[in-house]
Image (cartoon, rainbow, N blue to C red):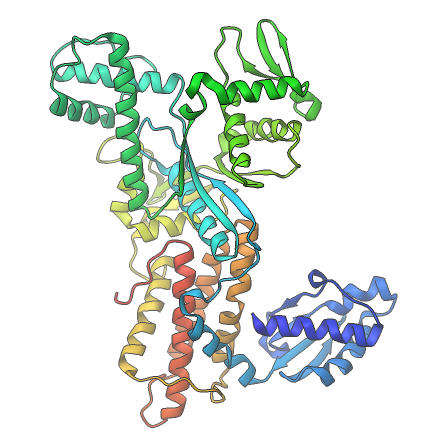
Length: 549
C-alpha cells in the first residue's frame, strides 16, 4: 500500500508544481495495468484534469511526466500512453521492499484505518428461536461474519448483534408444540397446533424435557405450563443455534431479546409511541394506531397498534433500532433476507421521521440459495427429510467449503450452491485451490529451514515475482475496499488470484537452490510474505489456512 500512497502523493505534488492546483485524494486513482508490459502501475489523473484545465489529456500527461521524473525516485521509468495514461515501471528493489513490511506486520498485515474508529452496529442472522438454522441463515451468517471481520480489521468499531425474535405468535406456537410433544412422551393427548412446529427437532427437545423433568407438567396449571414451555423452548433452541453458529465460526458480541422491549409493562415501547405521538407522526383510525409513513415516501401508512390492542412487528422493531442508536452507534447495518424487501423502507422511514439522519440505517438483502447436486436441486435433507441445516451441510462438505461458497458470490444475486464441486479435493474447488497453495508454501518454508531478512531483495527480477509482489502490495487496499462496500466476495477474488500467481510461480522457478543461497533466501522471503498475506485473507472470511493437506 505504501507504493500506491507514494505514487498518489508524488502525482499530487507534480500537479501542484506544474499547474498550481491541489487535487483531492479521491481524484488521484492508481491501478495495475492489465498488461504488465505497460508498467507496474498507471494513473488516469491527466484525463481527470482535462475538464478543469481545458487541455488535451496527452499534453497534461506529458507535463506531469516531466515533473514526476524529477521527484519520483522509486520509478525506473515513466511513460505516457494514449489517450493520457501515465504508466510507471517501478525499481525492482522498491517492489521487493514490501516483503519486510509484510513479515514485520505478520497477522496485522492488511489492517488499515479506513473506518477511522466509526461506531457501527451490524445485525445479521437473527433467526427465530423456533428451529434449526438452514441454508438461508447460512449464507447470511457467513456473509455478516466476514463483513464484520473486515470492518474491524479496517478501523471500524463494529459491534456484531443478534436480535432474538422471542415474542409474539410464533413463540406461542413453539410452546404449544413442545407441550403437545411432551404429552406424547407419556402417551397422553394434547392438540398440536396446525400452524405449530412439526419438525423432529421439537420432538427431540420435548423428549429431553420429559427425561429431565418427568411427568410433573401433565397436570400443571395451563397458564404456568405454557409460560414455562415457551421459556424453556426459547432457551433450548437458542442454545442449539449458538452451538451451530460456533461450529460455523460465526460470533456475536451482543444478543438482544425482543422480549426486552416488552418488559416493565412495555415501558420502552410506550416511550417510543409517546415520542412519535409528540412529534405528530401518528394518528388513530378504525381503532388502530397508525404511523404517517406516506409523508416520508411510503405507499401507505403503517399500523403500529392494531384495533385489538396487539402491536404489529414494526413497533418493537422501531424500539430496537432506537435502542441501538441510544447506545452510541450512529451507523446501523442490517443483513436481512430478500423477503424483507418491502420492510426496509418502513424501518428507514420511521427512523428518518424520528429525526435520525438519512442513511443512519442501511439494509443489505440476502438472496435465496439453491442447493444443487449432479445438476438437480436438493431441497430436503437425506437424513431427516427436512430442509438442510447448517450443521448437516458443514458435516457433509466441511466448514471451510460451506463458508467460502456462501461468501464468494455477491449476496444480492441468486446462487446455486454446487455440492459436488464443494466436495472435490482438486484445483477445480476454489477452497482446495487456495488451501493447497498455502500448504505448498508451508512445505517450501519447512524444507529451507533458515531465512535471513535482507535490506535489498534485488535478485527478485522475474516477471512472476513482480506479479506476486504487486498483488501482495494491493492487499491492504483490497481489504479496505471490501470493508467499505461490505463485499467480502472481493477477498475471495483476491485469494484466487494470489493462489494463481503463486502456483504459476512455483511451477516455473525453483525456490530452494543450495547452489544459489542468496537467491534462495530472497525467494524464501517472497514465499513467506505470500504465506502471511494468504493466511490473513483467508482469516478475514473465516477460512482455515492449512499447513498440511
